[in-house]
Length: 215
Image 1 (tube, rainbow, N blue to C red):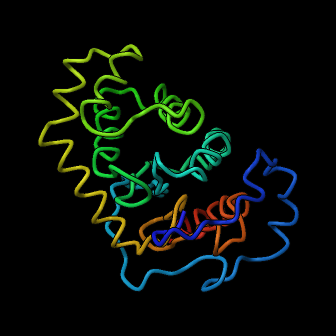
Image 2 (cartoon, rainbow, N blue to C red):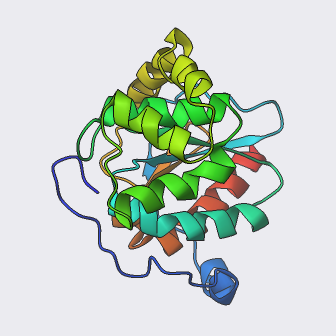
Image 3 (tube, rainbow, N blue to C red):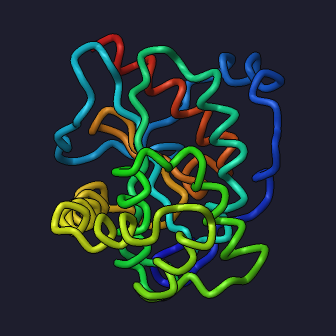
């Protein structure tokens, strides 16, 4: 979803086999400036030596991110071993964005992202629950099996607030125009608009990981 309420095309966001498109992906090289963007200034990465950082910029409020999540999870199971993946929640799309950023980082601090990432999306986009505002978010976490007091402590902590602020800075550094979007190695940016759809964006990401490995 675009910052200015423009929607990315929802086509091809289903679970399309990347393997089925391998031959086509290898037949041509993605074009810089059209299918992906080269950053004017490199962004510092957090990946350890020998790894290639891949970031997914997302929002819990974004319906396209919700649709993309299963495809992303499938890609992660077959991603190149050099990939160091992380998510970054953006400070736009819908309401209560800063609290949604803190929700993600609280789950991360508690080691619960893998378990709760699909639950948050389902609560917002399928069950239409009110996951807005600190009180409602804490109540939702408690109702879904987390220790309410511990979650609130982490959710409202300085450390989590600092990570949310850093996420907003990264969003600006990568000039993220809409979500979902992918950033590779602090050098390249691709989303559904540049690549054509998010299936192709993942193919481009695979290509760029290979380019990063070359140095």
